Image (cartoon, rainbow, N blue to C red; front, side, top):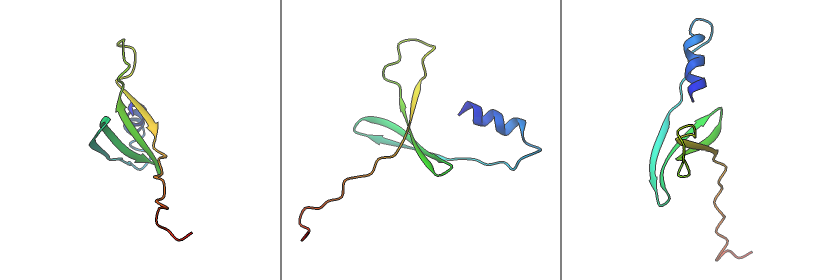
Length: 76
């Protein structure tokens, strides 16, 4: 995320600005922040395994989750 912000600042005059939004959600596993960039969905979670300051505060994962289809009760 820091890279994207820097890129926007340095290219103000040459490129059209763009922005992205993020949504915070409380789940059974904790708080997650979801966002989409270039049609790719991401989820950002607190890094629960952080033991040193040089490690990231958050971990970002590609959100490619697809729920199982409920086939119970279908005739085929």
